[in-house]
Image (cartoon, rainbow, N blue to C red):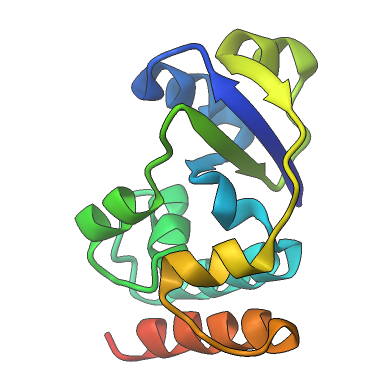
Length: 142
């Protein structure tokens, strides 16, 4: 999984358009803090997309897995980045494409911030497991 943090220079729809061929998603920076969680959500989205196909594209299904919902509109709102975004892709994104979207930056990964946006309060070493369970339960209940 490739994770890039950027300060967006382009409007969100234009940035998304440039990332289509890389099968990438744009999210809040906090959602990129756990590669383990991203791999898991990617796997769950793949299984769900093949089985039930809630979304028109795999990328939207992946956003819904990250947002722990089957409602695509809620998923897009939950994951929508502000001025700073996280680009997540199973494929490497070319440097010139990243530069055309925004300024790449370093982000200090903080699992407490990740847990906060999901409203999870647990021990630091249990955050990823709790989030995996939340994603799995959300996808099983549809």
